[in-house]
Length: 240
Image (cartoon, rainbow, N blue to C red; front, side, top):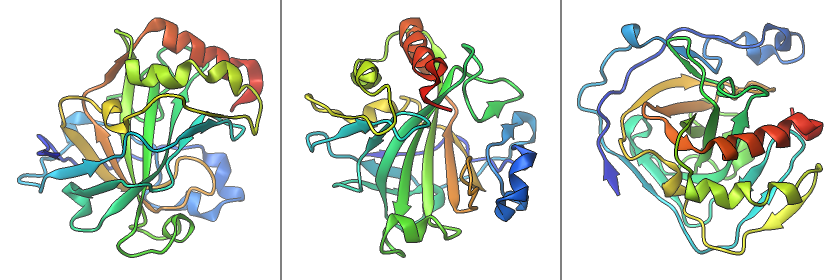
């Protein structure tokens, strides 16, 4: 499917934990993430090329607890992301995960005009046109592309609920459960495909500056119960 962005701004305000620089020198870099998106300072990208993606629905997937979040591994299986700020390079989906806070409404990594959201979903892709593996790509300036989706309380999200229902079974680091039903990553994205984009970094150590961020402007709704279950998953101390 092809989508044309309504706005492709460049964001220049940089934020992030200052304490990481002692052990991870790249955290001193000039393109650290996450950022606060100041909409009054965002510039239009003009006639940017369409952003194109394709994801497999029926291949086997598992949700795993790596010790700091929940994560769904895709490993590049039959997927494609290109266009927009990525040009003609083809990126494949490696994994997707979600960030939640200990307080409802304060879980997103990126903020918009200083406002945080309940959570933030990240679909992590790597550049298969230039690099031979995810590990190699993760160390290169154009190696990764992350689709960021802001989450806010509203209606229940059916696709995300397929993950939420399995959280009780992955409470400990290393726990892993295979999905028993098809799952379509495209259904995690908002209907209105307008986005901000900027060259950034991994948001956690080693803070490598290898990410082209594509953050959708329209938040996706999740139910209060889905937020509560995710918060319980984090507050229980199994994740950071």
